[in-house]
Image (spheres, rainbow, N blue to C red):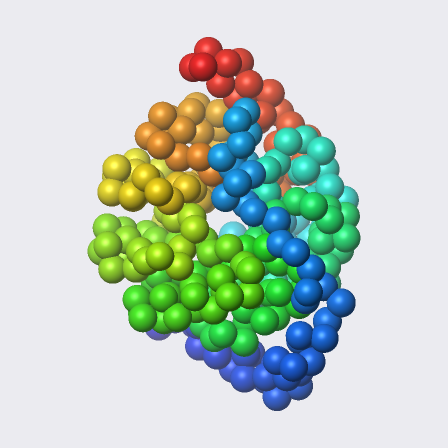
Length: 269
């Protein structure tokens, strides 16, 4: 059993337990459930956007503890002040050290910034959870969902006013999973079965993604040169977490990256 299989097996148990404690009707009564959502897709398409989606992540299965001393409200507010167009906050506890409390603190600190609930979505119940905690976007990972499940969950997400980021890792996943209920397509440069990272994955798939989807590159993005290379290939979004989170001041790391990007962005206009 690989890492992804272990995560999904645990997630099924976790979701079943959550369902037994809190009903969908109760989730719909949450204070944030009826709030309007903010579009990450639009934010990334805005002229002059940095394209950066900054992630708050305490740990990962491959690296263990990345940064245990940070506070989500401080880090995420710093990200936005530094120029992030969107936020990604992990809510998986067992493998990534995240939780709804982290997401809630980040939501309060950034009331109008598009926020992605980063988790392994396998059941429509989790969409109601996402709406109840104030998420704007949910993630559907092709590696752990059938194409029919992606369509079903994508449609349900849209019904709730949530945007959908579809994550793929190879050409087969892309061709089988793309549908009208997806808003953005993210190419994860990290193989979720081996956790090996390669930017070539994004470069190889760039031209295969239909232009009506916003293209996002995820994982292994460490410098301005890489982002410029991906931007030239058609990517408008860049999800970055670990390279920021492993520093003592994640927001300062983002600010430095954006400062390195700005001269290059101006030269290409």
